[in-house]
Length: 392
Image (cartoon, rainbow, N blue to C red; front, side, top):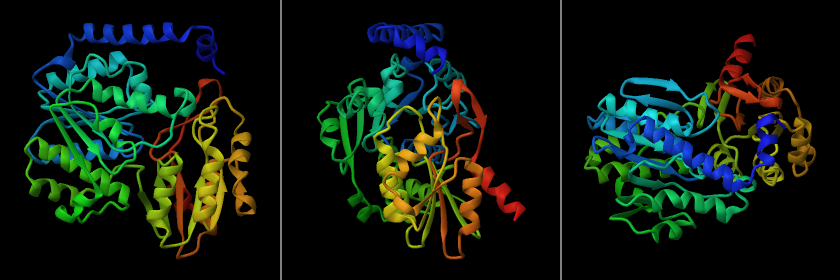
């Protein structure tokens, strides 16, 4: 446990909330409340999965329709033609950084800002003092349960984005939590569903039903702003996805890297790829957090994978071997435990046969591995794969 975490233990939660709120207000004051500007329309995308991809697809469509775009997500920041990696190891930047970003977007004459909104960000008021024109709900499954004190609290944080957005709500009607979002009043409440594809007949390059849902969410948003169905379809059907999300790093052998770190995400990835035997490399990100999901991840891997290699991911201050052993409780004899992530990936590639797919999950395109005492070690699953293959 680092010093910051130790200090937090002795501060009442209401004082921490006040601190976060005042920091959000300070950021808005410093940058002259850019979130209330009429010069830019702000779209917030939230949910458990698909936020980054949906954000990216919305941006691509709007750009192809001739608009100037700003966006931030787990993957990247973008203002007009300028792009840079998100190396913060968090989905949303801090309060003052959010406000600064919006001020820069306005100064760059962007007409839209498309923002990925996390539950942790909402909990810390990072969404405050922003007049969202549209709120988008992708889906909801258990995540950050220990941090929020239960699934209902987690869902309630997501709902706050919709309570603060009065104009347009875009809702995934297929999600079992959809009613909670549909019951929040707005000028326009628009649903999308997998059934919509009977009308649009999208032929996507990006694979997986979950990516089809992300594409339908983006299409629904952009049609709401008057973008033609033809432009939406054309953009979506040439989109190749974003880095670290169902990304084929190699085709010979097949090696796929994905960010999946929740049970639902992991199962969706495996289902999308299991036409071939799977060699699976996984861990459990967030040492000390969401321990409940570790044996669940192991159980899912056991169901879908021919071979399982459990390895280190982001242990933070927890003993990484304890995390690995916790996952292995449900994999039985099927799993190997290799603590060194590079060696785990190397072993997976070495044992893969010509018809196998090596699936490496948990980190995607993240540039760091977080270890004890707040240290961050430079890391990239994709680059690690490439270096291993180049030495073969």
